[in-house]
Image (cartoon, rainbow over all chains, first blue to last red; front, top):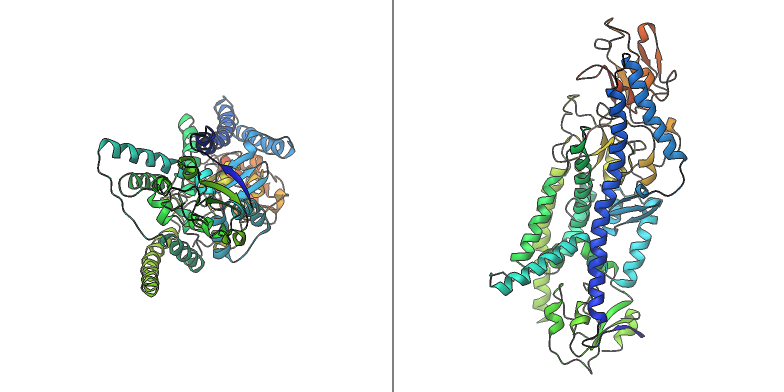
Length: 338
Length: 202
């Protein structure tokens, strides 16, 4: 067993980790928007070209349409011929992304697809490989390092702290943590019975990705007059509702008690190799870490804060005596420390 | 003490699962509604992108609603279902009268779950079949000579052949249902050549 990361109090690197974490998530959120903009800008340009051909004064309507369609097919053929990497070859969001042909899919998406259709496809397995292996090693790291919805909920967290400082009353509702596991299981069962994936329809990162994809598409449809499908704007209100609830009702209401994706990540990362460890010799039982933990866990426990720890490292960075550290080791080795 | 904790946990599990079964069941019913009639065609017909699994039930269960196919589509032909759309929430569909599929097959290469199966040949696409309405077609009813669908067809002289006055005839063996003919059709409103997928709408 070896210490990976220790933060003595006042260590300058501690804030650096948090800055890095927020930067990564902001970058992911912005890149989802950017990917959508690039994809739909390409469509916009193609459609504009067709519009120009259509508006030209051409007496023969059939020839006009023929020109237009040939434009279509030429772009198609050109795309098939081009092998160089282009920016528009990155697509998708954290729910499922395609990075130059390399597929990354959220384990919840995989679990739902497998249970509802009762088939496992090769491309799904390839897409699941990276996130599942990373979760096996790092636990529920997705929630605090990648999830773009979690980033928004963190902002709600800040807002909550600010309101408390000003003196606005906020509630401290505590629910049962098992809720999310029950929700995950019932969601998968209902999906299997009905034949339609249910959890993905309200899982915040998936909703956010779809919503951004829709908004970028409609952004360009405002510029031109080509029609775009109506979107899923209701689910945008849903995200807003969660943010309001997390600000006024309970800290990290969704992530702590409801999120089925977080539940799945917790379960996959049960035997994680990297975990927060408390050195009892140095610990002064000041409970700073308990107060700072966004997931409402107790990092003072020797073994680890539990399977729901999302490796945000906030407790490490606030610990005054610096008794908390990240340790690398398998679950069985850790038990000896108790 | 432990026993009390255990019974409390069991009771909570039962309570929450009953509540979530009811809630999610109602939500699933909302998601799995019947296709709404298409605003222009007037029928609950859904045309899925190329390579979509043949059975609609298989497609709906395998698709994870990730929007990758929509982002991949070079001509914006793929649309995603919203709450008021003919297709189910988040699932991809094509409205050929707005934009036909240009058979780039980009969507089939990007699908993460193979709900759209990988296709390499455009002739393997099976989105539907174009049907000519001889009453409204300009070349058929004698109001003019058009041939727009024939020129737009990527399999011209195979999928669509022309008769007198450029009157089109669709051949089932070669038509892939891309809908470029429907997009090109000069008839206003309901087009004279339309693509039907023949998918049962769930």
